Image (cartoon, rainbow, N blue to C red; front, top):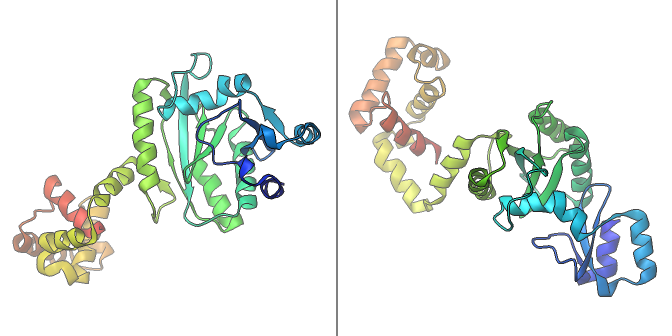
Length: 286
């Protein structure tokens, strides 16, 4: 239906909404929980009756009291909501790895709302789906994402915050994590952690030349040694457990240990110590 409305009203129809102007637009919420607006001067009285029959019309009081007031506060666009609105909340940031047809997105948002419950707020800002809920989830959102991936052949990744008090500190945390999440363009994981967001922020400041120079500087002659690089990666993945790393690499423990020592002596980076291990891990990851 929204596709037909877009065709009918042209530029008077909007669904990428950053600021709400109730003097200029009528705003509606579809059964898929998508919010769209149509310029008032483009809608006749008869058309408005038909729209009201098919959609929930939002007015500035109903909408601001609960939905948009919370989001605008978190995004730094409004004042703190009344304490009766939300005392605590958690948010989920979600983004597809590929383009999703509008109809498919509508269906996904409907399923998401059904999964998370009636108190859930769902918005779309930039390329990110923002989910806000006032309570802990009774089911793992990861299970829902896995189901969506399987049923719709859509790859999603998401970040889930803790349940926190709605205050200025949470607002600052949300803005930082939201902006970091927007910059995250690709990942092999469906569940993104704080560490993933921070790592991506660090990597994003490097251009291709700097990344290449950094890898060569840290890894030295081992930069093309696939066996050694795999050993070090395994060493980090097992939390520096030599015995388990050797087993996973199908090596004798002493052989593995000797090769690690050779890397340390040759590069000057002692990957058994946190500071040096972090630098080498970064070089392996970019």
